[in-house]
Image 1 (cartoon, helix red, strand yellow):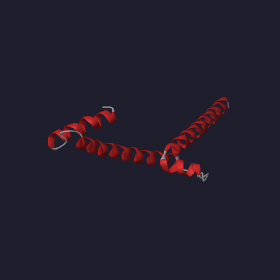
Image 2 (cartoon, one colour; image 1 turned 180 degrees about the horizontal axis):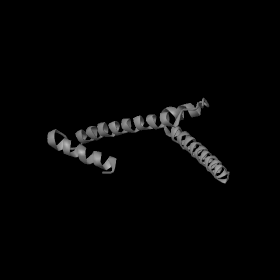
Image 3 (tube, one colour; image 1 turned 90 degrees about the vertical axis):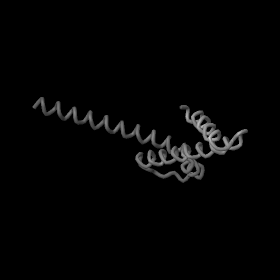
Length: 104
């Protein structure tokens, strides 16, 4: 009987820990969602909606990829504007600029 109580207590503790982790995950996902441009616009219009943490993480990854593409495009444009911005020199300059932006 003591073993049943022990297992029941462990199960309740485990559930409580899982619940606490889920609450923390939801809070962090909500904060992350507020950093995304679409969510920020929604937040200002007071139309808050619940979105799963998985969806927030997927949207965050998409947003980061789009920012990386934008950095690459801007690096290319900047290298073209620099003196000697043609051909191999431009490609080398763009790579240097890209590495500065990416922190490589």
